[in-house]
Length: 272
Image (cartoon, rainbow, N blue to C red):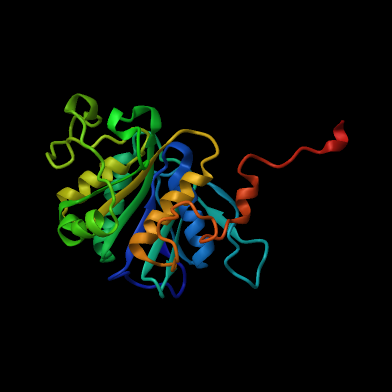
């Protein structure tokens, strides 16, 4: 599944793996854009899987300073920061219908074989599906597997003051009728892609994994991505910030050049 570039590490023991879920508003992918651009992460490989739709185009990051054009980007690529012990995956295409389970199984095998310390999935959920109690306050939520909860549960609640994703009644949550895990039976992430499925498998495999999400709607989701990435930074502290209460500050993050084309290029005025 994972194919490394020449000279890339044979394993990522002790590293944190960050994965985006293809979800409403593409918040996970936008957050990864911010991480790769700001931290100047280096591409070390890619994910080769028949479960992901193929994509090929110009590299939007241009991490190789010596070459400004001609670099190709594929559907799922892997970036690395040795200084931060961070491995980040960018997924640019959705999964093939009916292949979600196979893709999650492949990710689990990669996670265990490369000995990642913990896994963080960045995703989002439909704002219109919120409970009444979720309409006020922060739109950010998290959930963690029992293994990770034992290690950093107190930090998330007391130091970071994060709000755990509220459980929902089973009549709302029965997305996968074949799942029997009691741990994730109350987890409800509509529009969150594979987040719940991967979380369930990590619970069953005793893997340290957290899901970070924001409630959002489709549209201009740059502010949501800034918010989610800054929450992540409060935990991992990969970039020092003077004001940790400012969760939407664009001053902390370098905006990718590719974002100037999020809604397409401008029209040619000469046609009028």
